[in-house]
Amino acid sequence: MTISISSPTFYELLYEETVDSSQHPDPDDKLDVMYNFPKLIGQGYWREIELRPGLELVISLIKKKPRALTLR
Image (cartoon, rainbow, N blue to C red; front, side, top):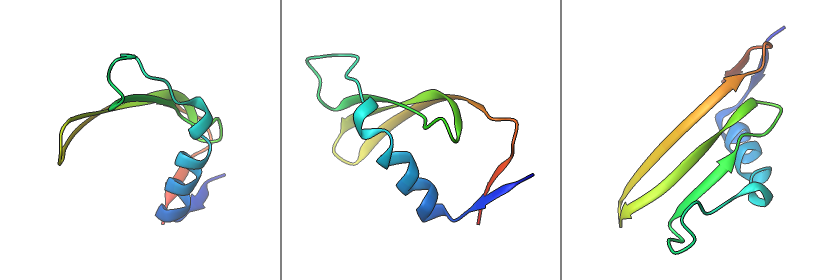
């Protein structure tokens, strides 16, 4: 069974559930933040590093749940 949600709903879910799970891999760099994916989506993390204003590096690793999730 496929679960279909809109892009705004996906990002709302993503950031709503990750606020409490954020970590700073480099404690001296507040612009380097790591988040865990919500369990509804799968298992994994993503890391956002602001290199300079307007330039951000995002690294992610996710193992999606067997049930497919599609964006509308």
